Image (cartoon, rainbow, N blue to C red):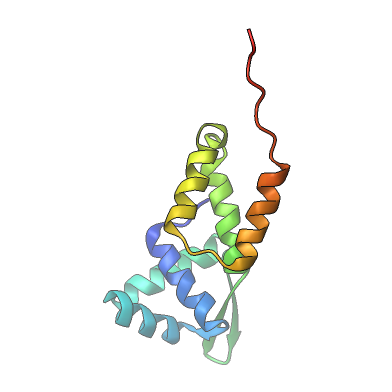
Length: 126
């Protein structure tokens, strides 16, 4: 199940912090988004329930770590969102992402390699 916008924000904090306490997440969410502790606490609970955050208790504190790396989760959730419409919008989406994102030299070389392997649909010659 894809993240809500608020869940993405909490996950970004946890990915940045790595292994962290709830108070670290509360502090960052309050500073970035102006959220009350209760709001962030609810989101953390939801992410743990959904299986996106691992939690372990150390004394009276809880330590949270992401179960997957950010890149893995982005790919997974993007795949879920696009599953039913991939054929219709794949090319348009790829162009949009390329126009709005930043590419490293490695990304550019990977794209060149993919495009060399890409086979154009044959045109009907009547």
